[in-house]
Image (cartoon, rainbow, N blue to C red; front, top):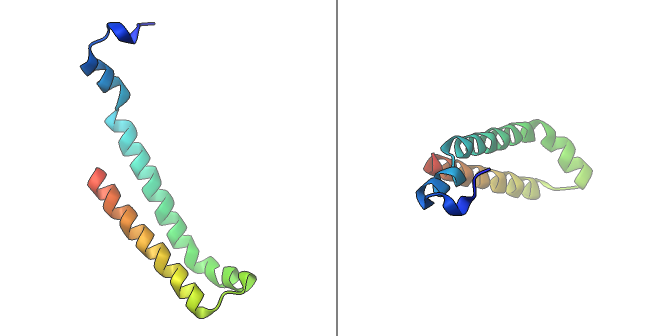
Length: 80
Protein backbone atom coordinates (compact mmCIF):
# COMPACT_ATOMS: atom_id res chain seq x y z
CA UNK A 1 0.00 0.00 0.00
CA UNK A 2 1.29 3.39 -0.98
CA UNK A 3 1.75 6.13 1.60
CA UNK A 4 -0.23 9.23 0.61
CA UNK A 5 2.50 11.57 1.86
CA UNK A 6 4.74 10.36 -1.01
CA UNK A 7 2.06 11.04 -3.66
CA UNK A 8 1.75 14.24 -5.65
CA UNK A 9 -1.11 16.45 -4.29
CA UNK A 10 -2.77 16.49 -7.73
CA UNK A 11 -2.94 12.70 -7.67
CA UNK A 12 -4.39 12.76 -4.15
CA UNK A 13 -7.16 15.07 -5.33
CA UNK A 14 -7.90 12.78 -8.30
CA UNK A 15 -8.21 9.83 -5.94
CA UNK A 16 -10.55 11.71 -3.63
CA UNK A 17 -13.00 12.81 -6.35
CA UNK A 18 -14.23 10.43 -8.98
CA UNK A 19 -16.78 11.95 -11.41
CA UNK A 20 -18.35 8.53 -11.92
CA UNK A 21 -19.29 8.33 -8.24
CA UNK A 22 -20.73 11.84 -8.25
CA UNK A 23 -22.84 11.05 -11.32
CA UNK A 24 -24.08 7.84 -9.70
CA UNK A 25 -25.02 9.63 -6.48
CA UNK A 26 -26.90 12.37 -8.34
CA UNK A 27 -28.77 9.88 -10.52
CA UNK A 28 -29.75 7.66 -7.57
CA UNK A 29 -31.01 10.73 -5.70
CA UNK A 30 -32.98 11.84 -8.76
CA UNK A 31 -34.62 8.44 -9.23
CA UNK A 32 -35.45 8.28 -5.51
CA UNK A 33 -37.10 11.70 -5.50
CA UNK A 34 -39.00 11.00 -8.72
CA UNK A 35 -40.22 7.65 -7.41
CA UNK A 36 -41.28 9.16 -4.10
CA UNK A 37 -43.09 12.00 -5.84
CA UNK A 38 -44.94 9.67 -8.21
CA UNK A 39 -45.99 7.33 -5.40
CA UNK A 40 -47.30 10.18 -3.25
CA UNK A 41 -50.45 10.82 -5.31
CA UNK A 42 -51.93 7.30 -5.04
CA UNK A 43 -51.08 7.02 -1.34
CA UNK A 44 -52.16 10.55 -0.37
CA UNK A 45 -55.87 9.83 0.30
CA UNK A 46 -55.02 7.02 2.73
CA UNK A 47 -52.29 9.11 4.30
CA UNK A 48 -54.54 12.14 4.86
CA UNK A 49 -57.38 10.06 6.34
CA UNK A 50 -55.08 8.28 8.77
CA UNK A 51 -53.45 11.50 9.97
CA UNK A 52 -56.67 13.47 9.92
CA UNK A 53 -55.37 16.17 7.58
CA UNK A 54 -57.76 18.57 5.88
CA UNK A 55 -57.73 19.81 2.31
CA UNK A 56 -55.57 22.85 3.15
CA UNK A 57 -52.95 20.77 4.94
CA UNK A 58 -52.87 18.31 2.06
CA UNK A 59 -52.40 21.14 -0.45
CA UNK A 60 -49.54 22.60 1.61
CA UNK A 61 -47.94 19.15 1.79
CA UNK A 62 -48.10 18.76 -1.99
CA UNK A 63 -46.73 22.28 -2.42
CA UNK A 64 -43.74 21.53 -0.19
CA UNK A 65 -43.05 18.28 -2.04
CA UNK A 66 -43.28 20.05 -5.42
CA UNK A 67 -40.94 22.85 -4.33
CA UNK A 68 -38.47 20.34 -2.91
CA UNK A 69 -38.54 18.34 -6.15
CA UNK A 70 -38.00 21.50 -8.19
CA UNK A 71 -35.05 22.60 -6.08
CA UNK A 72 -33.60 19.08 -6.22
CA UNK A 73 -33.93 19.00 -10.00
CA UNK A 74 -32.22 22.40 -10.31
CA UNK A 75 -29.37 21.32 -8.07
CA UNK A 76 -29.02 17.99 -9.85
CA UNK A 77 -28.97 19.67 -13.25
CA UNK A 78 -26.40 22.20 -12.05
CA UNK A 79 -24.17 19.47 -10.63
CA UNK A 80 -24.19 17.47 -13.84
